[in-house]
Length: 537
Image (cartoon, rainbow, N blue to C red; front, side, top):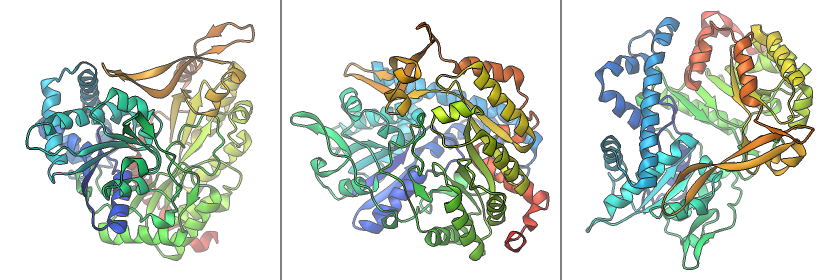
């Protein structure tokens, strides 16, 4: 069967899509009789938008390193308005997509873009089109593309391919809602995609594919959940089909994952596990050998590890393997600040090439950390962030404001933590707590004084409504009165204070891939790369 995997707009133009690269590798290795193409419509869109406006082209030349001044912080800041303008253009297309889905109104500008997409997706006359939807921002445009393709392919003389939606964000939505509201979608897939995609590409009946929702003679049916697949059976991603030079980076930065799922899996706020079938990791030696292969064949030196988090034990094993194989690379991880991130481990990570860790801190209040089942200690967090900075690793703190039952005292505890860590921190993400369906906080809403009032609507058509997994809620005080969530209030207080922020830090402006490049450049510039394994062993 001729198939095409599509990564949809809009994601960052610096991101190389890991999902379609992994699925493509699996299908080619396991089902060589299938003809599969991977198409990144996201980067194609960014380049299409810039090609239409000459005034944007210097910006692309800058981020792709063609001007040789990518690490000029002043220049980087001067291009921030262009980033903003392009994002606003993207937002406009998303609004047009919603209007097209809801009222069948197709704006001329959107039609031009959809025609461009059709030329890329249909180039090899596919029998199956699979959309990989990783981010919520991709949902509406993906469905608009599917609707347009269905219309174009309904003409006489054209064979209509199957259209299937899958990906991490789709796994968090309701497949039956999508099928009801979108008659042009044939099936919705929930869970890890390798086995299911293999069955689709080899022509298996919908009724035999785990994780699939589809239309049957008795209405919409949903099959049992997908089976857990061993990562030893999943080849590491092949990026050779993607043009790495087309992304908005001065040199390749590719994402990889060493493990799937979350080893902790207890945080009450977390909504990131819907697409995974439990935790498991790869063989460290084979994983590092793949890093070596990408380094030698594609010249990749920078790797963005997109695991939900890598614990200290696994990370130390990986670091030792990198050092033993003599691999010269730089990488990022997401970390949960537990006590086993000792100074020695952090120094070993730096020696292996770790230049940036995104730490899931969430709060400086021990009470809120305990309520959230974070499994961390505010005191330990302080020690780890300072030790990581001392080792030469850039720290980004990921914070959540407005956690359930939060008080002014909890907010003050968080600010005390941030004030203490300001000299060890390069950047911070500050998000307002969001309540998501199927999380522990949602399941136990009353216990945590939350009153669920509704659910976010992505769009409504004449056929039905599609909701996101975000829930609206109010908080209850002890006297039974309700009030709006604390998150926006706390963020406002944070903005007024901003003692943590290091306003001069370029890292606050960078995309993930650019952050890693800048962090790696900073250690080279400061002579820190002279650190060797023997020094810390």
